[in-house]
Amino acid sequence: MSEVSEVSEVSELGEPREPTSSPTQTRAVLSCTGLARAFGALRAVDGVDLALPVGARHALIGPNGAGKSTLFQLLTGGLRPSAGRVWLDGRDVTRMSDARRARLGIGQTFQHSSLFLSMTAAENVALAVERARGAPWSPLPRQRPALRQRIDELLGDVDLLARRDVAVSALSHGECRQLELALALAAAPRVLLLDEPAAGMAPAETERLAALIHELPTELTLLFVEHDLDLVFRLATRVTVLHLGRVLLSGTPAEVQGSAEVQEAYLGTGRRADLFVTDAGPERRDGDREAESP
Ligand SMILES: Nc1ncnc2c1ncn2[C@@H]1O[C@H](COP(=O)(O)OP(=O)(O)OP(=O)(O)O)[C@@H](O)[C@H]1O
Ligand SMILES: [Mg+2]
Image (spheres, rainbow, N blue to C red):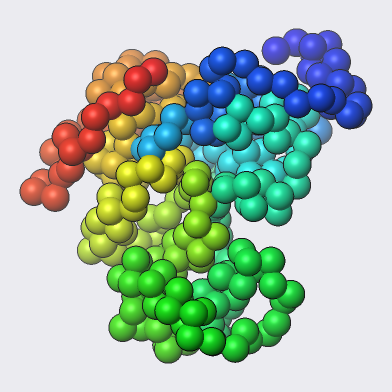
């Protein structure tokens, strides 16, 4: 993208603009076109197009600093783009706040923890449920029967019911990541963005998380960033490789694994060998889902 075209997009974004849509955007639940974000001279995200159909299991991979988390924040509304558009159900949400996008169905978990350590698992979920309902913030929502039932449902969904009254500070790292998934699910999102859900996990914890993600409702559209490429190739039906803020390749796991260009992008990162992992053992489930159409 030239400097000139980016500048013209920036000034265009400064003006109120009627929502627009195109046939491609209306077919996708969440999509973006020409999405870009610069930090000073650095083009962290540089003209990205992405389209997630309903029920997608779409992974976003790329070396450190490729722009994955920045792209996530542009999609969720945590950051404003320098250029480009974000679409939810064919509706232009580019100028909407993250809170409004969340209400419209975009959920997320973050690369870094967002839990209240001194509260129990149930109390953290209670806060998320109340926030999703738009209830005024309270340090500790009263757990009425309906709220209690919802909390238990969500904790059950992430296999943490037995840990409901344990303080987060006493949970294992893997359990904390499971709890973060419950918080994101509390708002009943239609699209869920997970930023490195397996980061720092022991192999057994990763297995547990993989099973939980695999069991999420099929109609829930999923976009996840993950450095554990074995996990990526097991869970994703489509993979987008980001490099230096641009899409290097978007394809099936097999296409990405077989790409010399992708292997080149990973050279020097110490992760190149991971791309060739093809045997994830008996838990491997990548044949369970139909590949998405491009
Ligand atoms: N708020 C910011 N201000 C300035 N530069 C930033 C900011 N956020 C990100 N960057 C830079 O933008 C680039 C992309 O960062 P980003 O966090 O999106 O990468 P990433 O692909 O998520 O990396 P990782 O795999 O390490 O999480 C990096 O060079 C980073 O230093
Ligand atoms: Mg990141």
